[in-house]
Length: 284
Length: 299
Ligand SMILES: Nc1ncnc2c1ncn2[C@@H]1O[C@H](COP(=O)(O)OP(=O)(O)OP(=O)(O)O)[C@@H](O)[C@H]1O
Ligand SMILES: [Mg+2]
Image 1: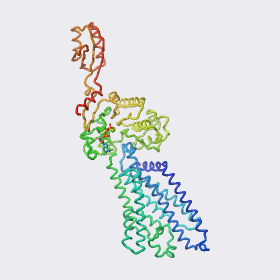
Image 2: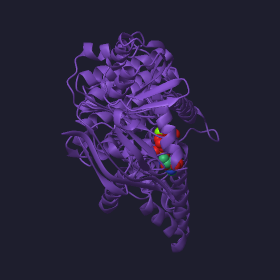
Image 3: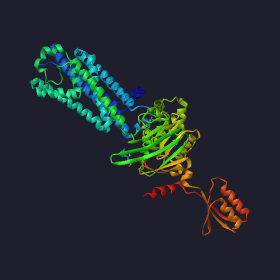
Image 4: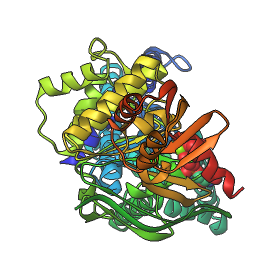
């Protein structure tokens, strides 16, 4: 019951803060740009001929993934900068004093905030994602292979990052927690790309960089699995071949494995549990 | 039963000992004043008492439950020294939230009345972010009072208030006392404490320097007199009221019994005995003097 109170409160906070407006502006900007881009792609002639449908699907897949990456970045930034300040900010300002003097457990507050942030991030991903799919469909006629799975994975990626943000929020200052979470997110993404290049070149030790980072912070693994769900696999098989295996940051050759999904769920619970433990012991 | 009972509280922040073996209790319906210089550990004691800070040692029972049990805080109202409320909520929404978290059934009208009581009746729908400092402290008072508490903890409740607000707080504390609600009041305004508190605990450097009722701490009251035509009968009457000491013209009588009629009765009797009374000056060691005395003695 109290968990839901805090979830609702967190959603209300998100909706009343400037973060939401910034998020909305960025999203509309990105969606607008992508609509224009896709439209140009379809109508433009390359070397005097328009793209064949196969080529178009490959390019649309790639571009869709690129735009979705932009969206996931916005979602990640938005939630990390909401999750970061939420606990540490309240502890610093003193808001937490009067709240925690009520007959409630600290873990309840944490769980409520987590739930609210997950709902916020998930809602954003779903809304912006579907809008993007519609734009691509209207301009190019391409519809992602498994849109629901893909969006769910993106939402999960957001959840993973905000869980990390919450943990940092119990430990360090408001802004630092947001910045560190987003920094780590970016670092794993780059590590993922590096690992992809390693695989493309058949260099195992470089490839391991990506794999290890995907285990330590599962955002990039989820992102790659989400891309896999968005893109057109037949077009990839036909055109991609070895080029797809590896180097391409906006195409993926790795679907989600059950083991990885299980690890990610465990990771999230672990980090959330750790955050609860730290928060419970904190002096306010 | 006690509203709060704390025993052997100890807290270190890194190498600095903030609280060092503090024990005290507040009975139900009692108003306890917590006094002491800056950094004495008052706020830290309050936070440990409410489970906001983990003590390194010691035990706290809050309204009959160990403080580790969140339910112990169900009937506690708290105004922190650092009073801040969600700036993106309105005053009314902040109260609604706290009523909800306290699990109390407080009707709408009573919530509005509480805001009215602290002087925010006309700002209920305004965002807290736009409140002045004093208004935020008033909101904090409303938050502390709204969920029908049995124990109210006020950590410097008047630090940001205007003189009218200070008087309001005094009235609020007195009306809580009347209703049998226990209050712990930490304040640097000694006059405020002296007027409303039954008992006082004085902290210094993390330890209890003195504690007791105001009577116990301040001793008995006294009266200074300037008299003429003092007869032996009159001297006997004076001695009857208490030990007499002379300092030139002035006679000081330390009154042995408390009572409001003591001095007028004494004066009437003296006049009846033919004594000419030039000056009567009732006196009492003020809490402020006593506090400075206590704190000075171990410096
Ligand atoms: N969060 C903290 N970190 C480190 N030291 C602290 C912290 N809180 C309090 N202290 C230290 O504990 C001691 C007691 O502080 P406390 O706030 O309890 O004093 P106080 O009696 O309330 O003083 P004031 O009258 O100024 O409010 C001080 O020496 C202070 O420096
Ligand atoms: Mg203090």
